[in-house]
Image (cartoon, rainbow, N blue to C red; front, top):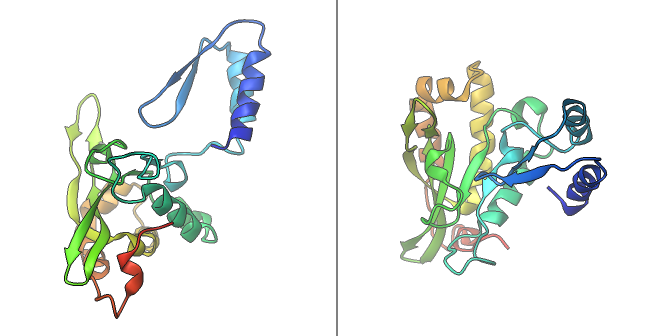
Length: 215
């Protein structure tokens, strides 16, 4: 959420004739507490053009190495590139994937292990140098009746991940499964085959872009 959109919300809340409070969530969102029903409805209308359901537009990403001393991969840059890759796709493709939980290192600040799709950043050593890669996790969940870590399906170079997710979204749309978890459980072989396709690491002479991170 941009600062100008946040300003719209704060202006609305500060003009109310009674006191409300804000509570931050572990997924980089927030709750507004003690709103009267009529004002809650106004807030929903006020934020309708920039709030979103839990798809890739509402993903959670760690601060990244530009801010965090422990950061390894530029997780912020990755999410920006994923958003750019999906920008001109149809609404059906854009809404095919759930939100992503992306941590640029194993410290898990974005809690990727509990996401339906989670990413954990690391560096992979090759003969030609280090490559920024991410472990791709699927089907994690934390709830009142179920708690499980996502299963790692493998690793993909950071620069290949946006195209991987776009192809994964198209595979999900063509599968005719509406629920993403059902899609994972019933198309596991195809998903792992797709991940295997994108997990290949070319030499520096073949693909030098793999050996650098996003800006």
